[in-house]
Image (cartoon, rainbow, N blue to C red):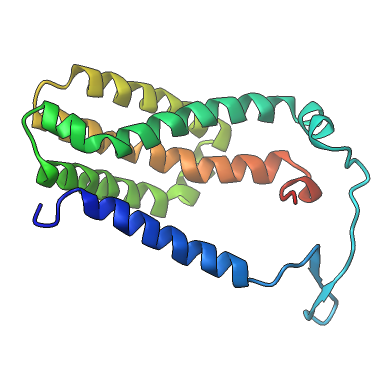
Length: 186
């Protein structure tokens, strides 16, 4: 509260600049594969099925649909995080309320992410994606119905079963549904 909400923009620009700098200085490899001794060597590997973006989406029709849903989820997630201050203020809170709300979300998502592998041993990743989508919808309804700060905090606790489930499950989804040469595109 002492620094105000403008510190978020400054920190975001700073962290983006650092990330962009790190990415720019990273070496670029077309395809890097370890050889039999474990040393990394560069090897050109051309996908037999590489045919551009339309060919890619034709091969992975379900992934294309999942990508549309993921985009909608992230629009919601980013919007609520970006406008958390305004949401808090509309309920009588301030920048401190926003900070507490975001801290609650972070505190609740960490345990779920830490144990995501164990969770996915019991529940398949595609079902976890569905569960996360349902809880994103519940979280949205809770935001709409929030009439006080406590309800805002409760909705933030749903981060444990929405975002924290969605992120690792989406990585498993891509890993298990795509060919290795389709997982990363230039």
